[in-house]
Length: 314
Image (cartoon, rainbow, N blue to C red; front, side, top):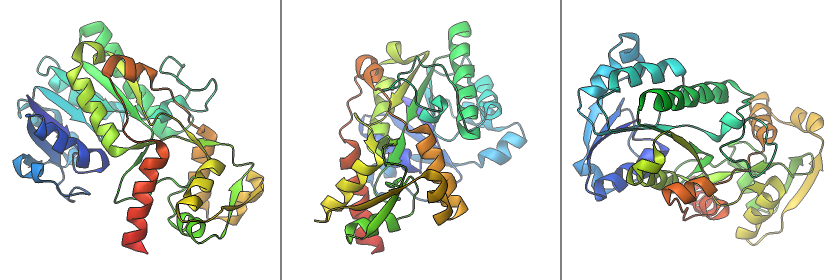
């Protein structure tokens, strides 16, 4: 199968493209070619690299045609963030591909209500990113239902992997929080530390795209959560990180309105985004229909990433 991966040198693509190559596919990676994958792999030697700036190509109404001209059997779009961008690509590919896979986000759900959240929950996004992703999901699923367009949407949680900083126990990507816990220093959590985060290893996300390709009949016209088997509370997460380094977490708790005044505006925004959502998603549907079976728990995925970070940065 000839598979075009759009945005294939990022977090997911670093693991996805080697998997596709090793499965015997012909793989074409479309990106701006401005960075290398996070981890080297011999499989990249077999990948055809195509340099296209998506934003510029879309302005010229060329991007969809450029992807279609690569004659793919399947297209995996990892970097689509607006309904207009999705529509531009899909209109060019309609009738020309066997499978179209879009990378969504669990942020389509907004505040958690009944947990674990499953894919049937009504979409009530609370941020611009989630709103646009929910609109893309609605567009693709409606098109699949009405016209047979072979779309699948996979919704990852907080993606984790060696080479970048995971969302930490205070809901930011500041590596200092991990350093403080590793050194036994006090970490202040908002509220009671009972809000949740739901991580997933990038390789498990990569595997889910392969699972969807391999289960076409079950995947087309559907969306799926792609996360670890269990979410984490902020305090449980902090306790685990400290224990990795032989420490007992020194945690204190203050109300959100007070907590946010002790950090930068950017960090307060990051934390609020995570604790307001407090994701806790079900993967039962993906297990049942795609045979999705994540190799990593949330803590296993984060531990790998944090220890890589500590070795490289500190």
